[in-house]
Image (cartoon, rainbow, N blue to C red; front, side):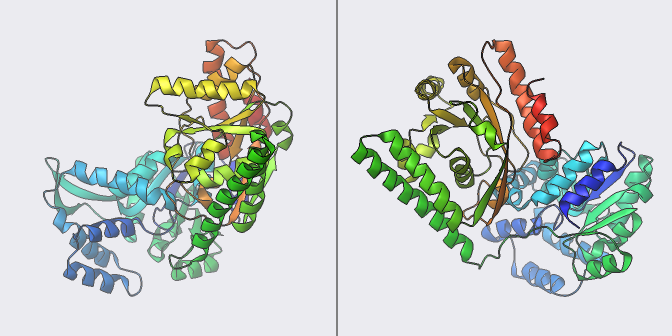
Length: 488
């Protein structure tokens, strides 16, 4: 089953909190297992002994674990945490999320979660993982209900034991059943998403089961029972050299295009011509060597009013740069964080490309940088800026800052919202290599700023932020209706 078809089916189906939806975590919402990130951390800190490593390899080397086997495995792993403050484990969960787990989120799964939430369904995570492993992503996805394996604590310190029953196999079924009964929800109309063989009992209990990247026994059961199957795109293997080669070629293209643009600008005594040549070369060559295509809807809005302040949601430095150079072609520069200017070679190229660098910790410098951007607009050069101010960890849009809106209002130029759908899927914030794929871009109608007062600006920030949320969560069928909300 295709994700687009499923999202449309959800949209056309029943709405309201009476419909329960349960998502497994490892292998369903994320690619791989959060325990892997935890084990890597423990190995780096010499927290795993030979006995535990041996038992873990032996337990996971065969077929599906029974509930008792899973309890034994987990109990051995957490025994050494006895006496450790709960807040330390919570902090570790946040760190693992930002450093590793956020980058493994299936963006297709994010779309399915958002489709159910937009229908007002009661959405819950149901996972054998612990709360500290799953809470950061649950918060990021806006999922308030978390059914998981709990760790026992006493006086703010872990005891090294499990509290209650684990949510493995029959344990997950019991937790889901209890959750539904406590809220008067009918499992016969509930949705369930999971990938593991041990999840067969849980999926068999809901009326709308869906196997996600299923393991062998679950795949066989799904085929036998005619359950829908979703197959999300998996990441490349760690030993695959192609992503690193392609990414290096893309960065090499950026350097080469910058050098060519610099040469043309110096020889022709026309810096802007050199910058436009560099951006054009990078867009054409980097997309080809990286095998990245860019599809644009609403392209006419990129040219109807220039100069303009172009807003982009920011997930990936390299991919976002490729997208903007591809669709804007020339006649623009950008506002970036001050740290970008310090990146070897790349920082020098961005400086030559007339970027304005903002240090938000220094209000005086930030105002000076925005004045530089205003000078560019006055000279007829458009500005690209991320209203989030930093790259997001997931497709979820962060809070908008007002700098870009102030800039457009003071210069009297329109704001053009550019929504980039899946840049983070190809290269998330902390990734070192880029994946191949197709980037989808939706350009909304320009928003005039002439005559704006402060109250108009404040309202616009809220409306445009909602515009990005609505566009990303309901792509692309509601694009035309969400475009109107920016002016409403």
